[in-house]
Image (tube, rainbow, N blue to C red; front, side, top):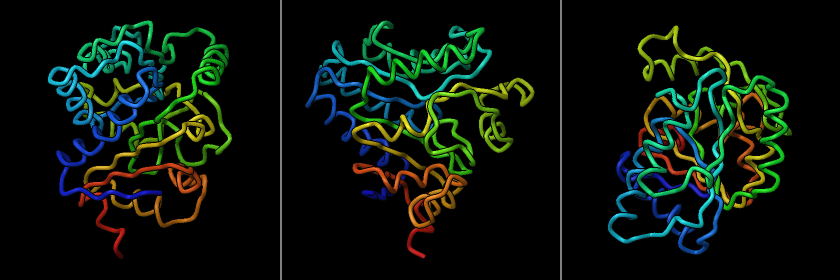
Length: 242
């Protein structure tokens, strides 16, 4: 695992954009595995600024997202489909048909998981972007998720619900379940880029990098990936030197 420590979130976002843009420029038909949450917002803003200033072309790019809340339609302003359109796709001019995400309103959850599994097998990702949960989760793969897992429905840990509550009017509105890409499929990406910002992620970063590879810390599996880059700001990396 390559580790890049930045002074602050702004530098983290700029460095992440350099890595993502290198993939896009080398392969105009790359498949980008993308993530939601607050951590990637700076990266996405940098990508949009570059697109406007330098004309980086996304017409041949395809995307696949990690996860989606179960029970939220794609038009809901807290759905991840809405988040991606608002914070990245519209700004880059990526057509909806070039983007992929689980259907949060699917009536048959097992069939939806099988559909997304098949899609991911047919759409190998050139790079997979990840955030890091405060409990060590990646995507919505909570502690205890088997490393061999495919797309599945997960009941979110209470810590994850609390982390996400700031985005809703009330914690009671936060969905308790989500569809998520499995750990097996995350590990199939050619390159993994994981971002961690803030002191509340420091313990998870330390366990991911220096701890045992264990399903109790899902992100620890990234120690086994052949091309994984962690970008952490100083606050998130503060325990790595101990």
